[in-house]
Length: 209
View 1 (cartoon, rainbow, N blue to C red):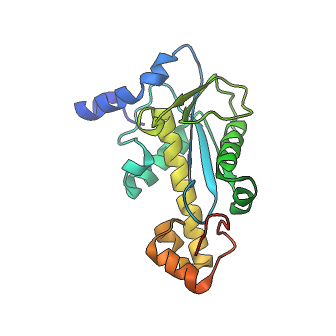
View 2: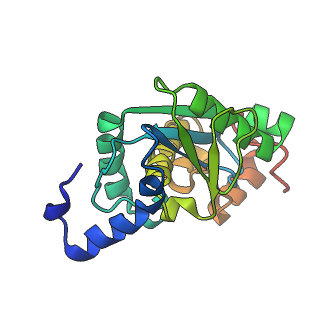
């Protein structure tokens, strides 16, 4: 966490803009951000994170995880997980994704993440979707990971956690180069699929070779 006066004026104003939703619900004691990663890959789980940040929290370079370098994501992951009021992850396996489809698997991961929080939030800010089966008021924000510090923090934690999982799978199934492609269908990944076939962590309903 960084004090606002330690930031450049440009960075402070950028983060102020990303606090618009959180400040708009200032009557809520606990605001939770929720986001997921891994909907598109051919292999590996879908991972969601729910996180409650301390109010008026400034994390330098916090943004949509896709817009942050790997080195900065790792540093932000450590800061966020150490300082969060509460955070939780939901992980849904490739087998379950194949069974219930990716949209339902995404909802399941998000609900598990919210249910795992040690503190019940008063409001949930979620990237783009409404989470079924959650009886807490939700605000769906299109491109929320670039517009809300809470959702951005969730996207960072989910991304780093999943990337580390895929690096672990890379050691078990090195031919697919999961540490590099994170399960997405790169040319090298597709070539490996044609030669070797599916691994136990591939989504059978996603792979067409």
